[in-house]
Structures are given as structure tokens and as C-alpha cells.
Length: 69
Image (cartoon, rainbow, N blue to C red; front, side, top):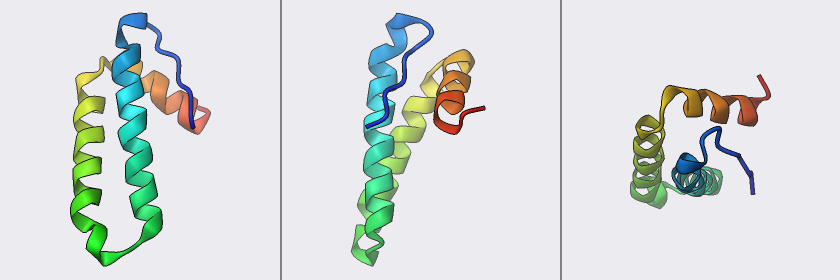
């Protein structure tokens, strides 16, 4: 599991929730079954909503830690 440290500790719980839903989304996409489209959309929506709720600085921090730049 990916561990991402928040710049501001008060956002760490939100970042952990984002990581949880992003991982669920990735796992569902990797399963590639047509019957999984509803859970896939749900997981993507939850991860996206959490990501949007984060400040831009934390969003950029997540992107840097995941992609490396």
C-alpha cells in the first residue's frame, strides 16, 4: 500500500481515505469484469470527491509522491 505523508497533518486522515478509495478503484479496474462497472464508478467518484476536497498544495503533494515529479 502506498503511504503518502500530508504537508499539513490535519489533512492526513483525508489523504488516507483518498488512498483507500483510489486503491479500491485500481483493484476493480484490474479485475476488468463488466459486472463491476457500478462499483468501479462508485470508487472513482468517492476518490475524486475526496481529492477535490483537499487543498491544491496537498493535491500536488499526492501527485508528486505517486508519479515522482
